[in-house]
Image (cartoon, rainbow, N blue to C red; front, side):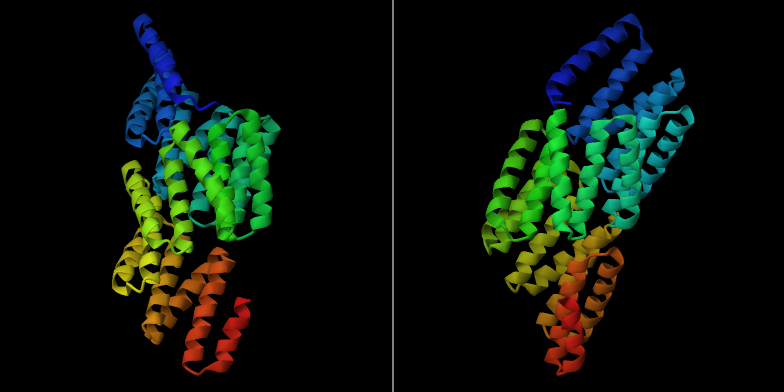
Length: 376
């Protein structure tokens, strides 16, 4: 897959016209299905949904169960990308059952990977790891290098989310090499973005900026607006960490607008969260509180437990800065419990530091020491 979407669209549109002319319904519908998949890759989810829904109905009418199941899987992927996780799970589980029934191990493995990615997006890292590891084993057994690389990529992203940066870097670097060998520029760019994010988290801002800028250029060239917007968000967060608040605000506001246009609610909420952090750093507590409260509600609605916990932590820290220690303690204690449940050690430690600082301010030195020792 070389990600030459415009050329592929021309070829498939022409082929579909020929199938229509000769009255080949199956060929016409298969072309429509492939065109729908291209629209997904271009983040044109509304058009893709319409085309794939129509193609699925026709394939069911023709009696092509495999083609119909492929359409269902693609429609599930759209729902997942749009953060409609509950609906995505239903559609993907049904598609997986269809693939198993018709004996398509490859189709079933693709559904397993998508279901694993959904669990990852919901911060269910342990379950996601099991599902994705199993899916990867199936891809290896089948001999599907692309499916194997994509599972490795997702497993690397889970390790990244769990702050296991060394293992994550190894897995993502390996996955990127596989994508390059296969010729999948999109997969390679996505791995580069994740590697750039790891460097950003480790405060290697210069290297991170170089990798993310390059990845963004690749996404733009490929035509992947979602990937480009995600890189812009990460670059905005680097500027934020470097206290370049004006530039960071401009970049994050632009990235947020791109996510809104694409229809990616998770990206919108993450940009709002970062913009709230900038306001907090600038001591604009009232505006920051409003943004964090709104972002947290969005994270809760889409099922992103990590994002919700991070917003709660930020809200608790604002209350701490305003000397509202009782409310701050309640929110930070709850956020810390969420981080522990998710398995986010970094979030847990940061909440413990804030709780320890509150106890120090109140003269509770023994309890403060317990929290601060836990945070080490």
